[in-house]
Image 1 (cartoon, rainbow, N blue to C red):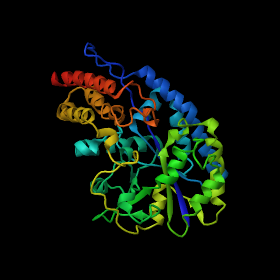
Image 2 (cartoon, one colour):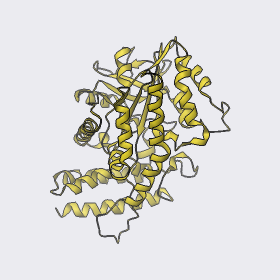
Image 3 (cartoon, one colour):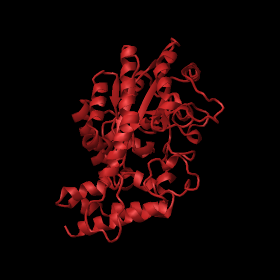
Image 4 (tube, rainbow, N blue to C red):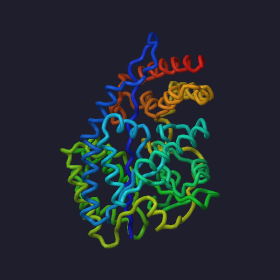
Length: 392
């Protein structure tokens, strides 16, 4: 049997407004642009995709099952700019066929710089998911699938029973990503590994007319999934939710592909769908997945170079976390909130130089002309926030 595990990440950052050294107010975020982008993506993706998923759950009497994680900052934006998006996710939750995962509230890299801040953000996120959807997340997904053995050990102490991570070829070796694994010295946590080849066929290659497999139809993809039988238990399709309708526009046929895919997969009697927790409950780990150094789901390197690959990025994030003590002790809670919004990983992603000349997908909704503009703007904001914190 092959269990297909669809997991979608839902996230939008609070983008900064253009902020110069001459600005003196604490209004750092571009509310107008953030609202426009949130409503645009909701119209093209979130609302339409959620309706499609609901119809599929109903059509297949609950046999089609899905998992999501929604960052705290996207939930904040839904509340401010598009409450209908929260309502549509609540409708999905009510089916009993959808699972919500935990992550860092601010979609941050806090694990690398402050374990206390990491734990606090995860607990904030857990509480928000309970409040909105009535679920207590038991599976964890770190920002951008950033993972190592240490991540697993810490979240195991926090009570999580599963973690999502990338299926990295150099770590797997000859083994398949189509099994559950466990971290070294940690028997209480199961690891679900992304099948990046099949996931990326949908997320990145689906609308590419130069791809040798274009056009990709549901029958062809289902046959690829079914080929897992006999050499694996689960096919983990992990991707950004914005793939549906935003990265891959409706005119690529992505919605029709999704409408037909469950039927094509279930046509093979050996196959079914499961949420992340259902996969963990159904399949015992077959061995250890030992990840001593941090990995992610970004790019071919599967490392952290997208966020911490140049001196601008490392300098900015180090200066940010130097303010932790002042931010956490500040009498004004708005200061802590601003400091936490500045932790969102997208701010450092915009400073990345390794693909700047390529004009590729990494510039998606990037508000800056160059990585250097992103760095200067961010540091202007951070400098102003530091001044406010020092006065408290």
